[in-house]
Structure formats: C-alpha cells, structure tokens
Image (tube, rainbow, N blue to C red; front, side, top):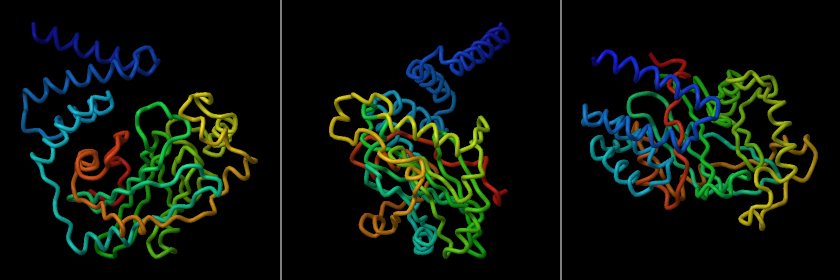
Length: 304
C-alpha cells in the first residue's frame, strides 16, 4: 500500500510543479505546502540543519517573521557560525567588488553583509539597496542583491565571478579577467532602480534560463521603468521619481563608482557560515529582506 501512496505523492508533486510553472498555483499557496513538507522531514530527521533552514526561509517568504526568526535562531544554535580569522577578513576585503551605478540611481545602498563559506573558497557579498522600483508594496524595505567571488586559496586570485540578475545567476570569464586587472576586485554594474547586477561583457551575454539577450532584457526593462514600472500610482511611490528620465543609452550608463569597503569599515557585517539567510536575519539587519539563494553551488568552477 505504501508504494501506491508514494507513487500518488510523486505524481501530485509533479502536477504541483507544472501548475506552479503555469502560474495556476500562487507562490503563497506553495509556501504553505513546502512548510508542511519540511515539517515532515524535520520529524523524520530532526538533526538535519538544512530542513530547519529551508523551513525558516519559507516562513520568511510567507511573511511569518516571528516563526522564521525562531527557526533561523535554531539553525545557528545547531550549527553556530565560525569566527573569522584575520586571513578571512583580509580576503573579504581583498576580493570586495566595486559597484558602478547609474548617475540617476534613485535608491542608495543601505548595507552590505559578507559571508565566507565555511569550507569552500567562496565569498558572498549581499547588497541591500533602499528599495526596488517595482515593489513598494512587498513589506521588504530594501532590495537584496548578491555577488559571489570564487578564488584560488593558493594564489589568492579570482577564479569566478557570479551575480544575481532577476532570479538568474550570471557568470563571466571577462569579469574574472577584469578582476585580475583590478587588484582582484571584480567590477559590478548595477541596473537603475531594480539593481540587477551585471558583469563585464554583459552586452554579448544571454539570460541563462530563456536565452534572451541581456541587451534586449534591459531594453524592455527600460521601457517598463520609464513609464513608472509596476504599480506606478501606488501611494508609497508618491515621493519617488515618476520613472527613469532619459534615453536607453543613459539608462545603461554605469559610470558612478561605489566602494562597499567603506560600508565594511564602518559596519563590519562579516561572517563565516553556510546558513546565509539565518545570519543576515538574526545578526545583521534591523529591517525585513527577501531571502535569496545562499550559495550558487552549481556554478562553482574550481571546487571539487
């Protein structure tokens, strides 16, 4: 009988995935489903930290922040973050990327949280901008974006640069070469208002999930934000700029540098842990944020 039940369970989950992809099941409904699944997994294996962490993330996404916080704290009780060594801090500073923003950028950078992986030569730089131009109404008073730098521990040189671009991970060999020519500091270009992160050579790159050229993606986004973006008349946007003012050439002008090292010297939010969202939620920020991919493992180049 159990085989029948498991076969039915598998088929239902496949159907749920199909309906999610077709936008017939809302994300909020899926969160509830995922929370229940993870509760079952925790009962079966209560010492598995990843189940606790993932359930915390789904509570977080569902807006149940107190439950999320309790579980994030549990994650760090089960597996405390590791104190950074002087070498860890030196490498975090050494590989810290330089950001290039649009001269007309409407939201300042609020915070940066840096997390070194506990066992791999990968550092995540988590950027928190004041907001996302399209989402004044998501109850997240910031826009969480990510850059990861993979490095060779022997030569202390960059081996890969990865960044978050609208739920996709971009990587670029040109970005690695650019970092080598810039004292091992990658240069990240930041999209106006929405803060999608771009790497050297993006003009010749395609978005990895659909194959759409990034140049075309940005052109569509430009038309979108030029006209006020999503919910242009939302009351929380009444004091914001009414849209991007200027040409597409001006939209893709990334000429103003920001050095996140200034934030790290003033507010050294630096950690060593696998559980990124837990350490951001419980140790770093006083405001809500959107939990995102903690580590882009399938994109690692030099790690076995």
